[in-house]
Length: 135
Image (cartoon, rainbow, N blue to C red; front, side, top):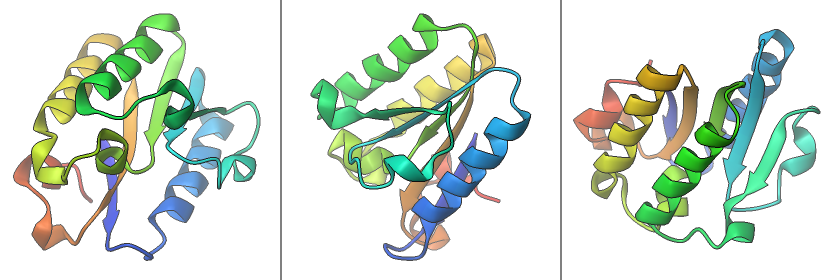
């Protein structure tokens, strides 16, 4: 798992999009990009699969957990799942979504999917369960 962190407006979305585009160039499997807005959809290179979680009614932590499990279950060729704004999508603070990170850890181990996320906040503000994934 890889985390891009920083306060709002520090370029996390731009960085994760660039990383996704680079990953697609070398990935042997599929690349999926999740967020809750269509704002940056056209900055991703094809054939990256762009999904707006709002289009699927995802508004809570439990719904998001089911959503990412469904993505992994639906295609064994998914290699990367990029998530821009995980706490915002779940409607919670970073400190409240430990179970989402546990789910992603399990999915990475069991199915070999790599998760890359953005988290708003400084390194000092991040909970330990997130901080361990920040470079």
